[in-house]
Length: 251
Ligand code: PGA
View (cartoon, rainbow, N blue to C red):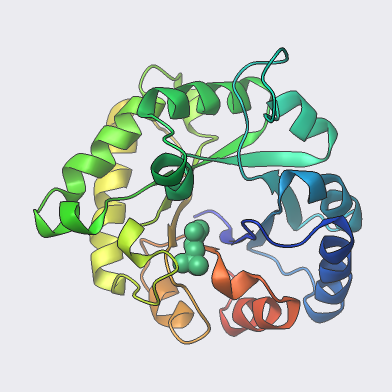
């Protein structure tokens, strides 16, 4: 069993100063606990400030919300994994549904990004999930498995073991409508079986994301298939985020 993971995806909230103040306040409210790992994904410009503010907290890591797969070059507006790492990132989200559906990120791009993050020695947190129409058409498994295969096939077992997965049904993100614990668990077990088929040896974390909040986090995490949560809206304020984490026992 791995540590229970609580990951905060701030999306386009909190500049460097607000991010630093957030972490300062959060550190007062939440102490390290065995069996619990915390991730913060701030906007790129706030990464260094947040990583710096977390220094000394072995239980907490900063990560990038998005990276480019090339090391450097003429890619205006992009952040390489090396630059993110220098700013303090220990990992990166890859394939978040907002990247896929608002910015047109393709399966092939997620594959390149996962590989680049792994090559740099960081942890990719690969997000997968179906849209509402896909769920209603009974295509959830197909979509999730296609996204997993596209991003991960060809990786060596040792690399696969370092990939974190977040199952985030698109219809549940930012909508207030979360998957039931049983629905999430069913998809998680499909994901886990595929990871094993792809060669994964370790029990790697599979997180759930999509309208996780103080009211539903306990029920979701009561499902043994869920190793943690990736949270957007409910992670934006330090007191609320601290309350959510404190409500759920560590793993
Ligand atoms: P939400 O976002 O918690 O606001 O639904 C989750 C995410 O996008 O990772």
